[in-house]
Image (cartoon, rainbow, N blue to C red; front, side, top):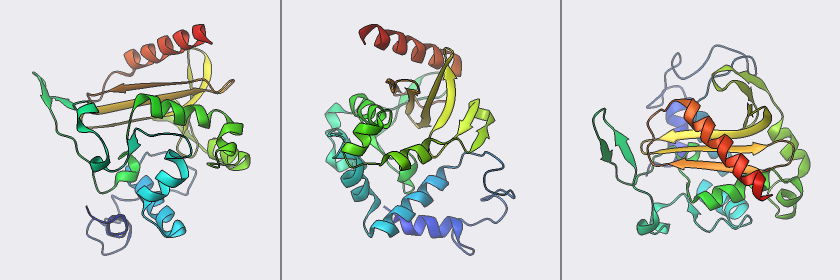
Length: 228
């Protein structure tokens, strides 16, 4: 795999293999315009590597996955049992085509393989500042800053925090994150008032109508609330 440093330099440095002064950047001041960019997360991953003086995958494992007990999660395919992994599918307009397991060089933006249980563990920890602090993952002040809204995110019908988007679901204030790649779509929502979290995973990464996804998330919250 291409080292993360090479990816960042190639995209962000003048003269890099993927550099384009017009297409790679917005001509706007920070915090004034919202535009989601996967490569921004790759850059953050590289900054994390430099700060920790270690591979980003190792940093995440030591700082997040292990403290939260996320045993079915990794950024390395070789560490996972292929028999337990969902088969990715791609709709070509006529049929669903199977797609092999894969990763990519800018993996900090979506290269974590995880079970639904593990993602819920992560989401529940984010929703519980005491737990997040007790496990040594993030202090209360840092968590508060992470979740502070920074700029309107019109395409998400909400406001963008650091990594999380504040939205509403069934009239309730929520924050979370959605993402998709070939053969996978993930939606995570955390209810602001009590930290209750739900996660939806699919193994078809085609862009889908948001309405049925929202309906499923609402149903999941209703079911979870009835068990509370």
